Amino acid sequence: MLRARQRFDKYRIVRRVAEGGFAYVYEAHDTIEDVRVALKIPRPSMIGPSAIEDFKREVRLMAKLDHPNILHIKNAGWIQDYFVIVTPLAEQALSDRMRHRMGVSTVISYMAQMLAALDHAHQRNIIHCDLKPDNMLIYADDRLRVADFGIAKFAQRTLSATRSGTLGYLSPEQAMGRPRKASDVFSLGLMFYEMLTKQLPEWPFDWPPRRLSVAKAKLPPAGVEFLRRAIEVDVRRRFTDACEMHRAFLRIRPALLAWDTRRRRRSTRS
Image (cartoon, rainbow, N blue to C red; front, side, top):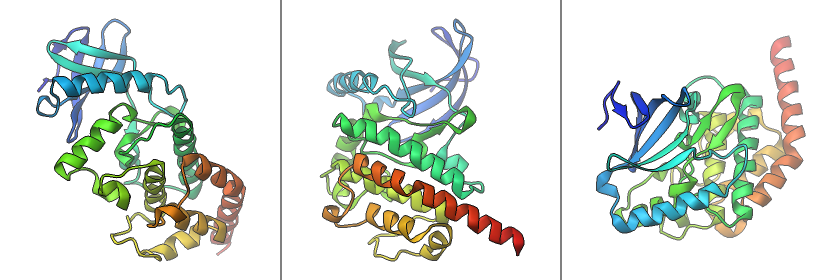
């Protein structure tokens, strides 16, 4: 455990900002570049020699994902016997943002950015496997960046071995250890639903889920159908991947925004 004000190579620890099943995340000050950064340090209990080699390969893979909505790695390597991943420091995670009121236009913006990122990854045959609001980081001007592509396969192996993980956002087939691109689609659909309704559907994800009426009040029929197809339990009826899902979203996005504008005007008149 690192402590506040502790010197850590060229970094000075400010505070611990997150603690997950895989790693600790610290806010730190880079004393050379004079910027705040995030340090992700895997838990020693989770990382053995072979896993470290796998993780390095994943970091190299992540470095190939060059997209404005995908978090990039500033540095990765060993510092004082810790394996450390250094990234730009976000203002907050989507999980934090979701605790406050979100307008439909904001939800649509975040969804568009998530889909653009996953479309880029799926075109390169990279599956995230651990999509959740904690991994959606928000920066200045509401720029959203998807994090943790680099640990996707490690996270999946951990899930398969221990039956643990972020089960609330897992697709049925991924929970059984058979992830595919459509598994990321399911997770994106669940986040879209939660941003709209403030509630996750509960297993067995029967349609219609609870609070669908809340989503229907905010979306035109085409938006509701998009949502239904994204969280379809039968993987054969779901969007095949984020590329197909992104194209479908771009087609209906003008209708989503127009519907929201009319809805807000009606609310103002009443």
